[in-house]
Image (cartoon, rainbow, N blue to C red; front, top):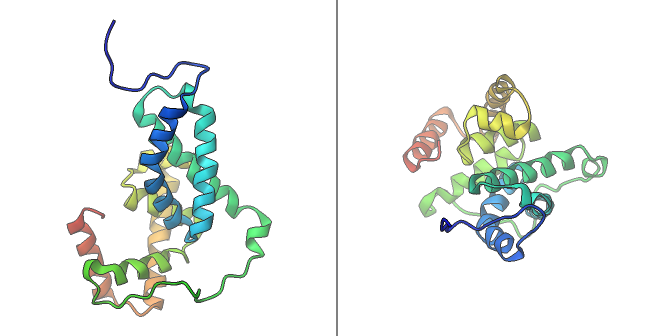
Length: 195
């Protein structure tokens, strides 16, 4: 009998301990991805919850460790995109400034000010394009993996990436960013391994 350190999943059974351990590890990353896509903390947490419910149901069928993360990410992104299609979300009227919004000046170490500005601009990118940008540049998925996750063609991912980057660039320009500052952000992101 071969010894394997990986948790054993048998068809038809779900180990709550294994699932709970996975959730503890994956929750922060899934929540961050969801928040970057939707820009709303509560909606992001709701999407992660919905995605994890889907994962729990599929847990016995998933065999490889890599499949868990990919399935969870796909379930969360699908939950977010499903929410954007619901009519009641469209009737909400967001306000410009929330009372609990964090304000940070540009001198903050670690470029927190730039990150908040980019997150704010990203919230103005259409949902599908935003999802592509987050999956490609934040989660570091390639075109093929992004296409599989979003169930679209690689060409669609490429065009949504181009349109999303242009929409992000316009949103940052609207916040007063010039081309030199945008190039600096891209250079800093590349140095940190983000771009």
